[in-house]
Length: 272
Image (cartoon, rainbow, N blue to C red; front, side, top):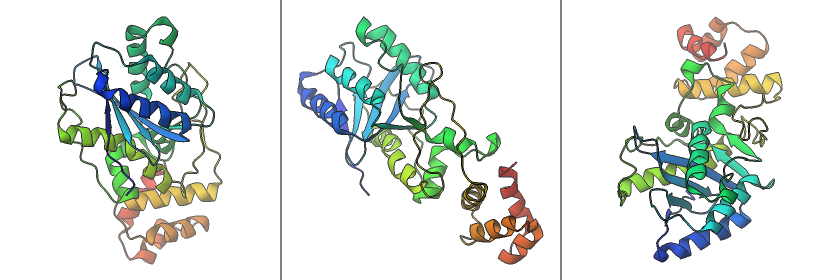
């Protein structure tokens, strides 16, 4: 595991060093991850998590009435727009809408566009959506279990994110939510090529461009994800891919693996 402890950043003078470290890390980062937290039923953001690939996850306190230093926000804006930086997220459409609202309400005029543009955004959830029926789309916790063999607890997801100080479990949850996107993206690279997807529509466009994968690779990717999600034998993906390529029937695939056809039918449903 390359997970490193989180770093708390707020407007207090004692945390000026943490802010400076974030500015420095953003200047040299090739990949960053982004996530936010807010209290249920509250319109206001409470926390912004920014992960640095092979580095720490910075937890930025958004509840304070004293804003963070301007150079922190300008560094974030520059990183989001830099063509050499890949920004990873998971279903970040609503996150960015809230961040843009936060910037309009809290920042000086020159910084209110801080979150309006991301040059190389890769939304892992939207990348995966093209391979699953909406009703079958797994969440982040399930995907980490499948690809990283580690299930993330979501118990803190709906906790009070405006309380200060945050509990140790809240800080761990927040940091892992952002950090896991790096190994998850790497683990999926064999199935989903790690291709940055530039977004151009409506400032930050959240719609995934259709990936131009060869049909055979697309089929193999779907089968591998499907058998993992349904707990089928590991060799099932290769058998299913081979039989599909030569137009084998569901019954043939089931017989080759010694399982019931109904189990394969569940996987087939993901391809519809």
